[in-house]
Amino acid sequence: MKILLCGYYGFANTGDEAICLAITQELKRLGHEVTVLSAKPEETSSLYGVKAVKRMHPLETPLAILQADTLLQGGGGLLQDKTSSRTLTYYLAILGLAKLLGKRVAVFNQSIGPLSENGRSRVASSLRGVTSIVRDTGSYALLEQLGVNVQLGGDPALLLETPKNISLNPDQVLIAPREGQTAATDCLVELAKRLIAKGKQIVVLGFQPGWDDDELKAFEGLPSTTIENTANPARALELISSSGAVVGVRLHAVILAAAAKVPFYGVAYDPKVQGFCRDASALEVPIPFDVGVLEQAILEKRQPNWVAVEAMKTRARESFKWALGNA
Image (cartoon, rainbow, N blue to C red):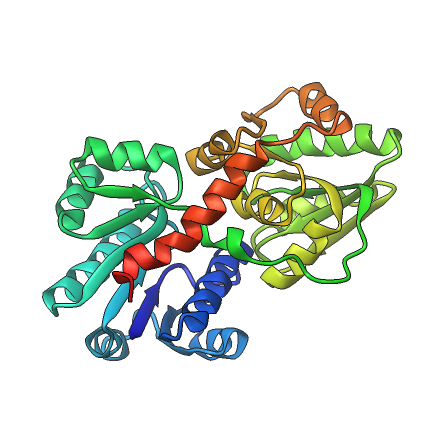
């Protein structure tokens, strides 16, 4: 089957690239031919061994839809209008064109929202009759409320395998801040200082070079601290897998930790972080947060519900069959 994958790909965002890596790996394992809509198609093609085309090209994009059998839109938080109504317009337009051309269409392991009232109406209308799979129970409840037939899946990045020959350092705590979340960063710097005083080593990981840079600078000069900035999901997974705990403002810091079975704690700048952590029964804190609460949880090695995490992984794998009609 020829499958066109549409998401926030080619923007050097480690979380979205982890999703792309996981989806393309699984689709190829299942024997399908994959094309990805990307902001940087040559880079995407080289990284994942698939065909890629410009995501907004006036000729290439419609042609890619026409040539595909199925459009998978996701994963990630695509159907939202919090950042801009243009984002929602783009993804709904891609869905609409694929439907118009008679293609099988699936909303694939997305988080839905936040949505304005107008956005809710547009999503409800566009998703009627579309196979819709979401990655968290909050999005499931929202689509049910909008009258959309929906299934609960899981984030595809959960299917990424831990690199072999990783040396685990139980005293290493990885912190993943996020651009623009200065109140969270202030708390995380204080957390790092407290953990260092307790003998921990800190790795501060940026998930989007050019975006998270200012947040990373806040940790400069701290002892026992390493700072790295990468858009490579394999490198991020390597660093996370070698850690004893992960604290993430970035959603895919905690998702990759779940994939690697490393205890994780979310800083909920957005409902999608809160949603994932609650589905996994993992500690999530608001912004700003009580540093002492998070410090104690890390020192006590508080665990998520690993049975719930395994259930998410199972749903993520099974969702490929749901989306493709068992093809």
